[in-house]
Picture 1 (cartoon, helix red, strand yellow):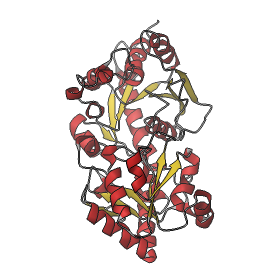
Picture 2 (picture 1 turned 45 degrees about the vertical axis):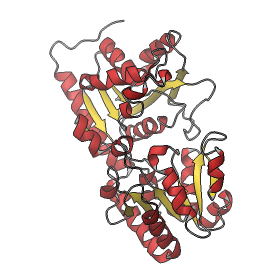
Picture 3 (picture 1 turned 120 degrees about the horizontal axis):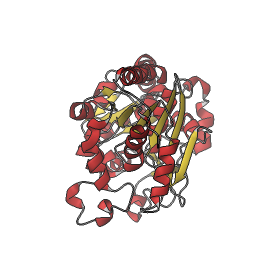
Length: 381
């Protein structure tokens, strides 16, 4: 079986959900990941180069029409998995499916309409500029068209309540994220971590509680906060100089275990807002697989996933977050035990193998229904 996974932009961190879905699908099928790349930015730094990743130039419309058609031609799978309701992913998949008579699975890992809300379009016309392939107009229309998919997969129970479908956790490769394969002292030396270090391993965004976390770490004597950042972009404003930050360059996927091992505690401090409510941070699964002690906020499915194997505090609560972090930094035995329980949970429920079983079931269901469709035929272009 051939599966094509479509990403709307391989130059942004959104590519990592598509990459994770593709890695999962490769457990049981031949997979190609396709999507546009911004020529000025190239591939997202954490996205590992793979021979099965195919890209086209990302341009503004009308020039993007050529790239759009190239993506339609490249969507050759027996099943198409479109990650996010964007023009270059779900839009391409619907057109390719209409031409070839194959099923489309829409995968949703965010409530994307909340990231560019309609009430902001007038103040920021760029958001809804129809010449942009990622325009909020297309996202809004394609979100409404979710029912056109043969099936839906989602990364959180909040998305499942809103759109239905099958819960498909990000999961993590327990072979890649294996604490036994990393020397922690070497890892700390590689990143220059020489004191109590809290790691935020995701892309810093306001809805991810990064300011709350920075204030919490600043309240812990001697502690520093390591954050993965793009050079000259993330947390580069003058106000961030007041915090004990270590700005770590974004590392490739296969170097993430080293970074996680170097940290004393991993923090996932989602804020309480609409975007965070629907989002489930991918890095929590990697940190669990690496056996790291985790402190997270009680947002989305974090309390459920970390029940009994992580510390959960109220969102946007600097004192509570600082207390939880400082307690784990001060008690290495407790931190180690928490990390061991997290690793056990990852092995039991969130390995790529376990997630692949779920995805394979979705794929088997849509292909069997497609086969049973009366009068099914290939449509020539």
